Amino acid sequence: MPSKTPDQSLDQAPDQSLCHTSETSCPISKTLTSERLFLRPFTVEDGDLLFRLYGNKDVMAIRKIGTQSRQGSDSQLAIITDHWQRRGFGLWAVFDRDSGTFMGECGLREENETDDKVELSYGLLPEFWGGGLATEAAATVLDFGIKALGMKQIYAFAQKKNTASLHILSKFGFQHEFDFDEDGDVITRTVLMVD
Image 1: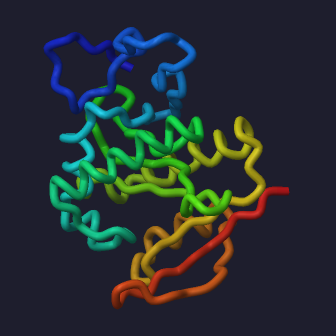
Image 2: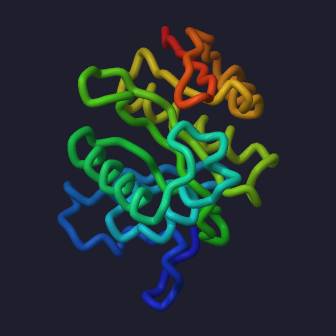
């Protein structure tokens, strides 16, 4: 991963020296890497990055929460960073490992705050679709969830019309549980059972 100097744009992945909190509370210590990707927890400074993704109509047309305004995206960022504080895991910002370019998000999060069900979430900007990068990000996050966190059950949701996402989920062994209507869209809930 390239190092980041203070004058580089915020859409690049920082190196760990940029974390100004103690090592034990620094979310940067929970970075993940794969062959082509670098993943780090979202921070409160990532409003512009997240809005680039959550405000993108092409991306969010097939996502559960739909296209977000800047205010909606900032509210989602608060939820994401709170999740990291409460649970010690969450959504990672995904970057190109070589160039440091922001690509999207991938992670594990509560399905809701009233139970312990955890769901896989991922979304990349359109220019990064079709090259297996979402699959690579999801594989990296699932490996962390299963091996580091000991998760035995992980859920995932996708709009039924989002065949690309459902195909990725099937590659990992996610099984169809049921479909439901949400604001006129048919959503498929799947589950991965870990032996």
